[in-house]
Length: 503
Image 1 (spheres, rainbow, N blue to C red):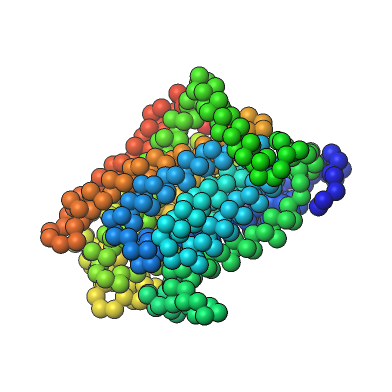
Image 2 (cartoon, rainbow, N blue to C red):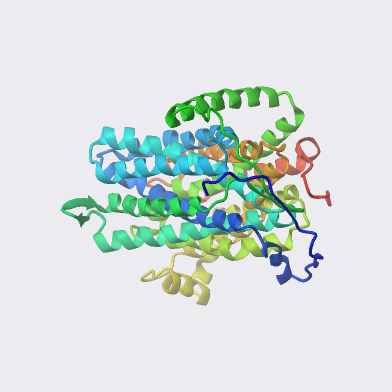
């Protein structure tokens, strides 16, 4: 890996192309894909597994290990940590374009290794936050735009839709792995137990961080096998040198100068693009998608409390959420294969409409589902899948239907948001535009911050509850996205590279 790589071109047309036909044959576009694309899928799996384990544990760790109150822990994560990650992700896009994919991967992993080690082995609150939690934001953010840019760089135009669908499927596999580990460690050690590691008492929540640290370590050899400068094209594989700024300086000095220039370049980029109608239209598109991400994010910030208050302590919140991950794993590659010929924008509209419609199920009267909850399907879901004892609450049926329909819509729209941002990116700015596709998460996080007030008003811990009203508000909010995308289509849509407009 250390030798200089000269520019090489391997033509694909030396072999007569064979057109794939039929449904299953649509997947054969990945046959012969560069190894870097498969490594990108593996990197995504490891990064998401580590991140998801950490994300599920943070609030519990802040309260149990560091002594934060529920309010302080929730505010720190919901209003500071999570939005900060989105902001740093936006900045990280330009850094990726400046450093190159492989170097940015390594830099992000090194920062995450240090940060997670601090969170595992220190019990001092100030050190755990200053040396662990806050640096982790930067490390995690560095991996996000790199994966989007890598997926585009290492896939041909024909492979792109399936590749983005596959990477979204891999993400959900990571969520499933993380959920299983999360439950296993807590079951094995106890909610407030500890692991005896060479005489050190590592609490249950810090043990979960230790597992995420293990996933982070596995990333190092995986990234090492990425070849420098590889780019997949429809004509063949191409090798070009990755950019290096301030190559003559010391490593950390070079990093600092690059970060400084990256921040300035990012500001300059936004100033320059703000005057262009294409960027304005992309920004409007992403702002509307934020209303869909509100529903996705409320599963972490609102749904757990709703479930516990309506269904009782110990309600199987994780198993209910896993319905989404399981269905996404199954549906994303299938829907991706079936919809390759359709534009990303159209699929986002279709998926967004399905997602918004699903939330209205939760606003219906629970009495409508009482009979089905006591029927075969309700008994199978409640007793068979969820392991609930006693009678099955109608909300179990409603939640199952809601999450299932939502998952279908998500499989249509969510992977295509990233593809849309990458497809319209000017050459050399793929990571910057890829990072912009995470603006909806920032909007969603700001919107879901109102979830605490909605819970207090309509689903309080004590007193009468009117949860259906809360879900109706969420449903109307989600509907803003498909209605806006349809109504403003002629103003905000941008042509997509490598795809004829079939709408």
